[in-house]
Image 1: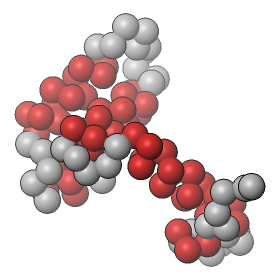
Image 2: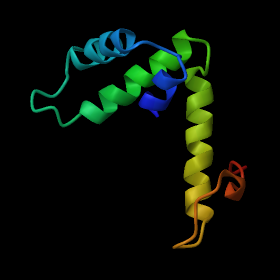
Image 3: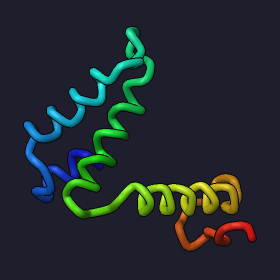
Length: 89
């Protein structure tokens, strides 16, 4: 996703490197790097927000919809967002 967004011109590689570096250098980051994916995701989410593409609420809402769709999809079938039954009431 990061490469695709870069290819679309949303951000430069130097912007990406700066965003990821800032996340990895956060206090509390694991010295063995086991939390690298979380830093990658946080950097991408912050860039999306800074560029006005999607705020944290938007990302969280869509992620929850995909998770519900995954749980509603029979094993072996493609996970489609239209399989999302919607939030539980």
